[in-house]
Length: 545
Image 1: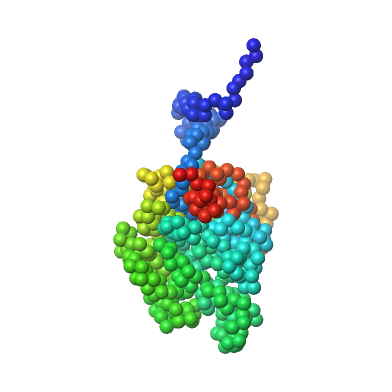
Image 2: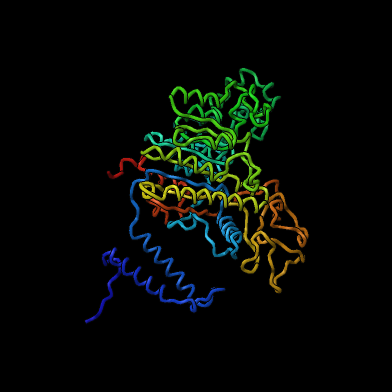
């Protein structure tokens, strides 16, 4: 008789997984300290043990997929947080903890499911945050620089801006179902990524009414309308301009999206009218509104009319005084423009990303129907654009702490089984980890080349570097502290600002339907998984009771 080995798939799955786990546990625990040492990681046994533990965890994770409806979804977006940024930040975190760093994992890297997403936009190999954010929030690829409008709308062109070209976001889907929503960022709340959750506009830079064009010939070219442009524009120009009926992003946020429960970030300048001084600077800025609207007051007026418990805050002291249990709506505008970098530490007068994330969840989780929260670590991107790896990494570590906070806050009760948490990026950067530095070398330090591979110009170079950007050229770094927050890594191609990069970015997932992230997907796929998991929008008809 020929013996035929039965394929595991034909065995009762729970029995197979139990036996497999038991076998691995027995094998793993059979090793002693002598097998793998204390100071190093020698030979094959250590790595066999490590591999078996990881495989056992994978088998356990796939044994019982969570296919509950995701009552809550928290989407963390690291702006510009490509794979190399995650790797460098992982090493940096480990080194700050006193380890060599390479063996470390960030909190979200421990999530059980991971995938890659393709980030190109409809008209560009390398995307921007507006197109990328819109693809994730709506499930539709769009053109560069466009928010919430399909590809029939080109950047800055209002001719095709119609009801049938405007897209509904996942945030809107949650509101339709009576669930709470929130947006947290450390950029301006009207900036591209946070705006992708709610805005529908042909140009990402039309953040305030002062940025809107009156005619194509009057644009200053930088998204800001100049005084002389206003003087040139006649009433006839305004009346016939194709963009005349388009509201700016700040106005859309307050007037078109009154049911968003939590809004926190910077960008106060686009909400105050030009008769109101900024409470922090004491001046009327050039970006203050010229249409006579004070959008902070409009927001307050709407909440009073709803008899809602609402608070507007603009500094950390006011923020800390907000009682989450007694708050239904919170508007926090903590800076005229973007919020400070995390490296400013205790000098900052605003809450950081961790504190804002915690407050947002405390407020949103009171809705038993659930919530959708978007948290953006925006300043990662700003660090990279300036060729500042130290800044980008410290901002990534801050985002990681915010993720860990959210995981802890949703780890018990219903929330543990009904909260989908995703961590991803909108795009990468022209940022690399280079050379052959020995393990444990300061990731912000200079590479230590081997004797047979030194730089042709004889100058030292850093492990982290950029293909392009403002810090171009070679200089002698021998006596330079490259780990300083003020140091900017060298780049090859001189540009006024470093560019995004076009490689795939990672998605880390845990919670209901997280297993649907399993391959290389298009960036739009993120929306479709969230819609399906939450049982909203078009996916609602497929939901089981």
